[in-house]
Length: 360
Image 1 (cartoon, rainbow, N blue to C red):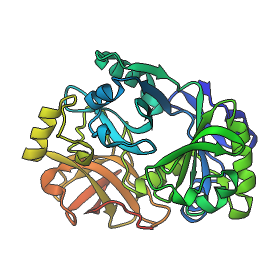
Image 2: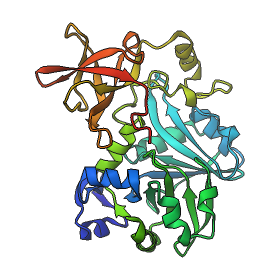
Image 3: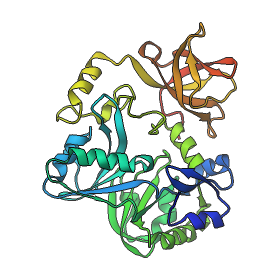
Image 4: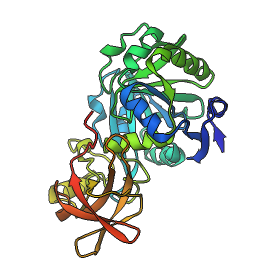
């Protein structure tokens, strides 16, 4: 089990620690609902240093990225980031990721913690163009400072105007007394804020200064459990649950990051799938009665026939109802379609809705 540079800090704060993607990670501090509400209404800080970071450089960097990723990275300018996925050869997804253009011919790929080795091997296997690749995952830490008060709470820590950094844009500069920090207006919560990339040796100083600066704004440390409820309220896919090696980006609703103006891994098959409509789709649903849908629960029709499976589910802290996502035959995927979630012995009625669940 690996520790992040802040594992002992979390333990000292009384966090409940759990193994996650090979790391010793804080799942919660005070409790999921309190932490969730902190991010929705004020500002909270996640240690997500377990995420992976790859540097792709050189005159052939873009060529490699265009080949392995579904989105069009040629549209990126320095200072902009892009959500994308790595399709496999069989119609599924190796991983979803964010691509940052740091400089001309220099890109940072941020991948899921559980997929670092898999992604590295996959991208390396496609690198017949001579792009330079470096795995920085063991050297860098990542803090997600999320919530509507993040800009105001953090402004004193940097000379950059945080309010001027638009969504999916970033700057590289000073933050919390450290130079060359990536300050990125990205995150997985739907409540605004920043993600801060710095070296492991610098992150404790950054963490301490972040909490000093946020003291008057109700800042709190937030665990991975609340990160999951926050992202689910937004209808964001979680790799390993909602997307994996067997799910296509088209059926997962990620057709918008598949740009068919270029060739990429399995692009012809994915283009054909998009044009002919997939047999199943990932849908968002709300329970019509009390209950909590969980990952792995069956989705059934009105006659009790199994038609799909819940990929993510929870009791929404913001809405106070059971919400979830799951794959169903396309005929059941229209908004307002009626489905049923098999919770133990009871089939609880649910309605297909348009994500996000939480509108802010």
